[in-house]
Each structure stands twice: as structure tokens, then as C-alpha cells.
Length: 194
Image (tube, rainbow, N blue to C red):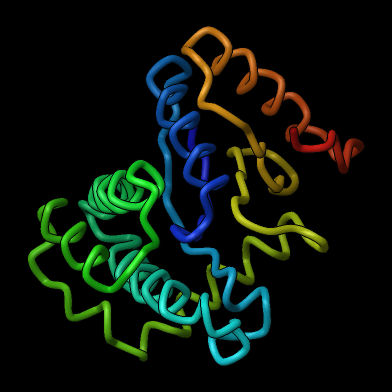
């Protein structure tokens, strides 16, 4: 089954959800399509980011440009998956803020030789288009990530998880999310964060 995962590398909750999805993929034969979702766009643009978040937001947006450039290419999803794993291990896995240097190092470690897309503002339209698709599929009042299983009428925001569960629990969560996403009745399941 194809599942589209819209994400912003800046978000630690999105990172944990992605690790859950990667763990579930071989168990449920999921083909993950990685697509950009921009928290900067959601919050009014890079210029509106608070000063302390501007550099991380810009670094994340440059990563989204590279992701947009890889989307649809023959090696696209595999390369994006490797790239995101490298970013996440260097940031969320190391308790370090995302930076331009980390994004470049992650691209190189993922085997992406052409990194010009990181600074190619012409890709901003593709990032916005993907973001808008995700937002329209699951919005309003959503953020990163958006998960859209094949055949589901709409995408869903989340699931937002705490620690990445073991395989058995991860599969149970997937099965529940897949059932909820397949219908158009349930629009929110939530409880407070610990």
C-alpha cells in the first residue's frame, strides 16, 4: 500500500512519527512517499519566524527544497528517506538544532551528490504546492506530519507519538490509524501530552 507522508524536518514529533512509520513499513508492505510540509509556510513565512527560530527554519526550508527536487525522480523516495534519516539522527537524535551545515552533511551522507537545490528558490513553489496539498487533505487546524494512506478520502494529522514503540505496538497503531483514516467520520482523536 502506498502512503504519503508530508513532513517538516524541523519538528521532533514528526521525526518520531516517521521512525514509527519506517518501522511499520516492512510489516504492512507500505511504500512510503516522502513529501514536503512547511511549518514556516503554516506560520506565515520565514520572515515571520521568531529570531531564535529563523536559522533553523531556514535550514529546514532548504532541506524541503531538496526534498521537492527529488520527489518524483526514480530514486526519489529512497533518497529522501535516507536524507531525512541523516537529518533526524544529527538533530533530533543528537539533541541539536537543525542547521545549514547539518542539512548539507546529511545530504552528502545520504549519497545526494547534487545539492544545488538547497539554495534554489525556484523550488519554493513546489514546496508550497506539496504543503498546500497536505493542508487541504487534512486541514484546517493541523501541522506536521500529515499521513495520507492510499485510498483514504483525506489525510490525517499525525499520529503524534511519544517514544517510538516496539514493532508489535507500532503495527497495532498503524492498523488503528489505517481504519480511522479509511473513513470520513472521525476527525480528531487526542489526549494531552505528558
